[in-house]
Image 1 (cartoon, rainbow, N blue to C red):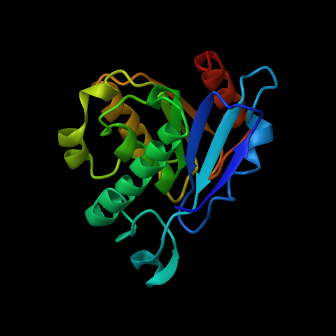
Image 2 (spheres, rainbow, N blue to C red):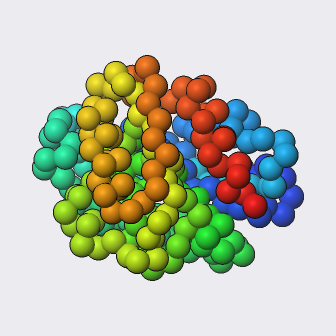
Length: 218
């Protein structure tokens, strides 16, 4: 699938696949690269894919880029299982493409914001191979009961950075906190952070992500 790619230096040693939120595209998180990356890190390859264009029910059927349909304002109630499964196949394909470029799966991070963060969980916990870690920003665990059955042992103990705004009106922090509890109860080590912000990404959040990511790039 189409994606924006950025390499921070020659011969990247690690890959970061970063999924955008509803209505955005792969360019949305390009500016985060210079803000996040430490000059002392090994070279990284960032992949920012464009989600498919689809009608979104809560937006009156308006067509926009989204990883799945949003059927109701209560995000954890009626959910688009078919759309989530379809995008899980797409995201799995992105990871397979990174492996074909020479990255081991345990050198690939899967990150996402909002819908993208939900897809990071839906994909990263169900792959038949272990990733380097997950980054889940302003998101929630989708189709939780189904995902609980489909989780793979390869993901046991997978490190997860999770962050959320305390004033998020789109994905309420209660959903984020419930996701943290869901993950922790299943043995995933979650680095949880909250910030006084809405549905957004803050400089403090990026700094905390840098502190989490840096020691893992070894």
